[in-house]
Image (cartoon, rainbow, N blue to C red; front, side, top):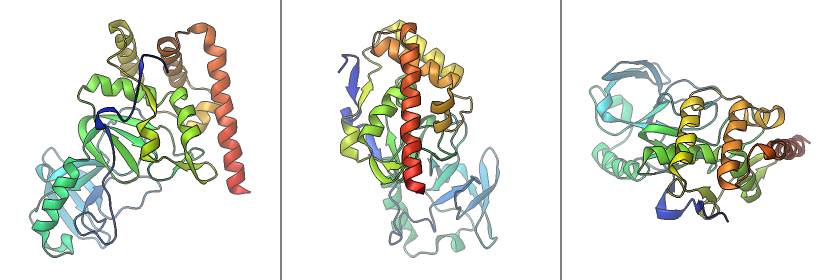
Length: 294
């Protein structure tokens, strides 16, 4: 392993997102998350309007609620249809306190007890990187665009994702680039567990030993190159992961070339090999997809 690499599990950086369960009062879909509409994602409470200090939302029967932002925690339910490496806006919010007119919202007894447990659970799940793969991740799906996204504010994912927490925000940006590189993808595919064809997942024990670029071990010049790339590319929408690999993608190519130059000590002469690796992975995903449909 390159001396520039570390393993993802160092310093307890990774944890599963918020753990929901039908029998859980303190963290249940019936009284926890409010969401912006998202393609192919069911929503219990839909956000109607966001203001500087308040958010207005509705439930499935049309009751309307208004809540102050101070009673909410930034959240993200899924990476499905998340098209940018940087989280440009908060898609979901976890309710962490009582609010005016909330009597019909809770549908539960002992609300104070629920919230005390919820806040403790939430605090342990906050981070600045969200990584796919605890829940099922379909590599062939049109809505699977990235493997990881970075947030400027601490955010908590739900159980379908992993949360990573790095003290330095620039380090988080660099790690996000690496996790979305084809080199990280190849290793993660090798270590993935098949759910059904191209639908995969990862165990925590596997991710703990995943080799990743250590931002603390690279030179200042290398760090500047990576952060410049992040600033230039992280807010641009990416097509599906499968099409990035099959057809090629400018952002992916730039990430792979810089990562290769830093970690593998290669350079432009390896561009052909990088593209070959991308196509090989695309063929592998397509085969899995065909097996799933067959």
